[in-house]
Length: 281
Image 1: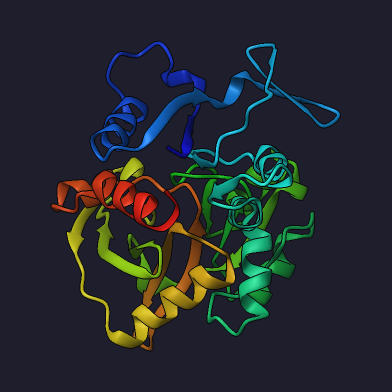
Image 2: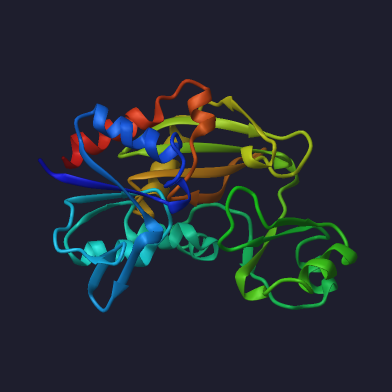
């Protein structure tokens, strides 16, 4: 039987029941030869891989990483291990600036975005028509995302961050506190939800948003699948802002949470396990 390693953060290692153990249990339930290992215990020295300070001599057939370490994924790929998701996908989803660049080059509609520079507020105020978004390139779950409405807010942020780690983006007022997330497994959009937050411009569940079922049109599904293909995403989520003209790409995530999909009845772990077994094992 072909071996799979399921990789999670080590913060789950000492907790009896958690997302890592629940995913592992689902893999075992689907008769996948799976071993649960933890990201923080790996170390690469030259081309040697160590786990808990022991050198790895037998690599698995497949790695399913619930994390964002493109260097470790690249190492596995160099040793002919199948990776979900690939190092390419992880790199281009982890860095929002790379994310926007590659999708812009493929004609995916999105808010105007550029790298943040330490410019005077008035320059950005003019360019972005008063209000704009500043966000960390590597942030997740809505952390380090700021809606800037005036000079005081801008100065407070710009003087307390490393600008090289941030992007500045057009603010889409129509999408205040709401967005759409679609989840792709393989070559299928398995579901989509509306995330809504009445108390913040951020719709993330981690920021207090609620989730509701949302039906994509066929053209919207095709756009989701096009984005997943560009990013080489086998299991990936794609988020969109909502405008009168239709959905506008916001960001893609190679390691997206799915608790809101579970709440709405999607058996996410089962769908992932069945996909992995059918396509790779």
